[in-house]
Length: 326
Image (tube, rainbow, N blue to C red):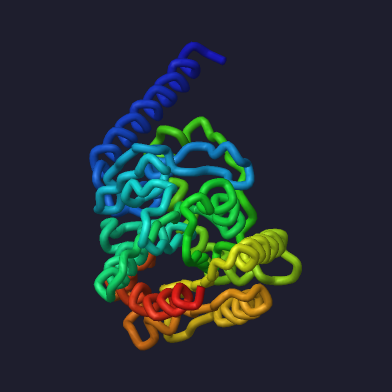
């Protein structure tokens, strides 16, 4: 290789490094407080989460951490939950509802007081009595991880009602934590990865999210089998300890008019029935609503504050009846 060629290659390499560095700096400025789903979910994973001691749980929130994510302040309490600092010991005269779930339960993109858990707590207290509704939602959990959390810590709250909040992707296999040299710090890597993924789905016929979700339930998928086993385990514990279990199925909000996931609800209803649990389909809470009015942003169909209010209103009589029958 000639000296000229070597110089040219080095110049190109230096130019690429400078471009990438400027691109990284620009993204950090532009997305310091953003509403970009990929960037914000990455911030959530890197700032507010840590590896859990139990591999079955995978990850958990880091106690005492806080961040500004998807337009709202998010604070994690000393018990690793996005909620008030409730002690494990239950105060006399208080009824407790423990809500386990994923990012929908966590309240992605909404203030803490607008989560379904806190809205339900407010409604229950307004109706009389003393209630605590504990939000044990963790983003990117599947049902198996949620149940693992319950048996590691959740049961210690001595709940009077347990609500297992279910979403269609909760049948995913428990992920194995992978470390990528760029994933821990690079905005550019996360940004470009998300855009290439979107381009692949839109322009190159990659599997759509709806088809991916439906594929989780085709045949004997290991994630779904683990989900069923976890629900059965939780139902057995609740039945043996006289704790009402409610399985709340949250709808996928992209397209409510041509809803494709009714079969998932049918499966959950059967599992709930055989385990002595109460099944509630929260699709009923938003029927007839324009789907886009329920989203956090036009590109992020997580439930917004309005959707969480509708879900909490629908859950209210179910939880009251369950607690009364204990």
